[in-house]
Image 1 (cartoon, rainbow, N blue to C red):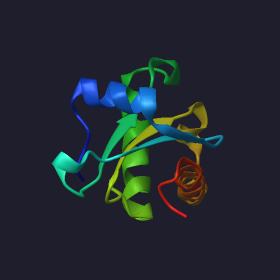
Image 2 (cartoon, rainbow, N blue to C red; image 1 turned 135 degrees about the horizontal axis):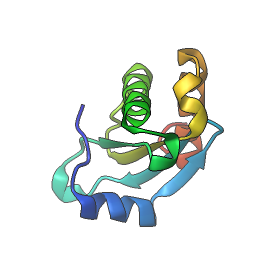
Image 3 (cartoon, rainbow, N blue to C red; image 1 turned 30 degrees about the horizontal axis):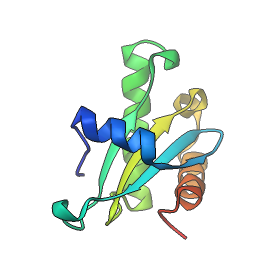
Length: 110
């Protein structure tokens, strides 16, 4: 899975990206720059409010697997997936549904 790593690109995504929120996840979407080609990238975020490093890393792993199940990374889109507190205890089916809804709201999928 291609990931977004440069802090400047992640900051730009957070400033200009279109948002789609659910109770489990926040999705930010920006069109991939044409100089990079059509391949999309994803960044997984779990803030310090989530808890210690173990909990944050688990949340990012759960988001990564959900993105794989739903078909990410999405061509032509740079996407940030931001975990909310309930992600750590959500079922895979609920997380997949929330991710699809967030992607739809952010304009990634129809």
